[in-house]
Image (cartoon, rainbow, N blue to C red; front, side, top):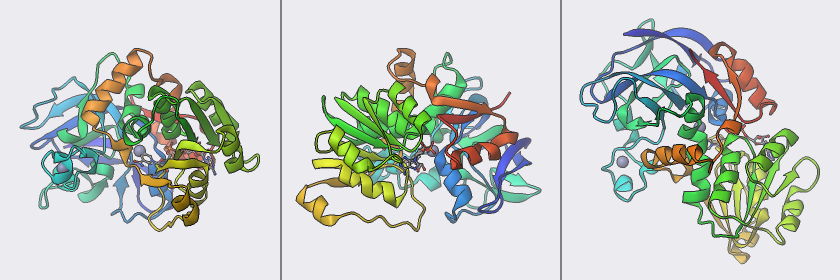
Length: 367
Ligand SMILES: NC(=O)c1ccc[n+]([C@@H]2O[C@H](COP(=O)([O-])OP(=O)(O)OC[C@H]3O[C@@H](n4cnc5c(N)ncnc54)[C@H](O)[C@@H]3O)[C@@H](O)[C@H]2O)c1
Ligand SMILES: [Zn+2]
Ligand SMILES: [Zn+2]
């Protein structure tokens, strides 16, 4: 049993509380990781602001990189001292989805990544159970996770960069290179240029896109999108973003990505797609939200709309590959790290995300 500092959501809509929690010792198949960096994902902000039905209190955070401190019995792929990244797309390898190769859709995730009923919870406070977001609970000095939710990464990769591989990079680069079938020369539009959107921009370039348009409501984010490979940018606050994108692309994009998670931009991306084009919904809406599309346009222009979860990642394969691509200068991670903060400043950092004043990923760093 170890005591660690963590950021807890005790009440939806309230600031996170920094408090000490107890972590159990690693059991069968579990790994204790000393966290060095934990990225703040917009999904975490959604969990703070909207009720997703989680049992509270919960330790949020899932984009973690750190060093293995201890392994439980039966752990075969990791040893103390290894550098690891966590991913919420851990999987069983045996269910129908896994056998089909769609490991990110594993139907047994909760069973294999969490603890069995009757076992003590991994995190507790004063003897009371604390929920572990995504079976990771990354906004803490240490995490106790299933081996199945981790992958070893090369030790020459800075851990604040490595952390981003676990969510924003697999989600964004994966959406462009795995979920979408981008052909050389295709036209792409990305609406929402936070860390996930920027990774779609660089993923689209990697996949051979001929022309990439980035759309956001903030100039600094659009500036960063150009660094990540956007050929043109559209400020959605400056006028009709749909008309601007349709003009820039000469009638619409072959691939249109929504990376905000709200109804307005979801409707916009369907109109930004060209005849026969594909629309990818990457932004995570609140559970109650319904999107409305113009069905006549979808049918008569034969557009397809697809939800994309975690960039269709097989993270054990993808994360080491993306680390190699970074080391060869083929994808950017340095520019993706917007700012470092301490755990104590996590509420200020989420407020900046809410206000859209933070650019790139905010990464909580630990000693
Ligand atoms: N599908 C998945 O598996 C998955 C995985 C991770 C994150 N997500 C989701 O992806 C989305 C993006 O995540 P992030 O961490 O990059 O968020 P972020 O907050 O860093 O970025 C969101 C961006 O959208 C921009 N934006 C807001 N309103 C806009 C508008 N009307 N038009 C254009 N741009 C607008 C903001 O300025 C910001 O740059 C979130 O909804 C998040 O929950 C989904
Ligand atoms: Zn995330
Ligand atoms: Zn499975």
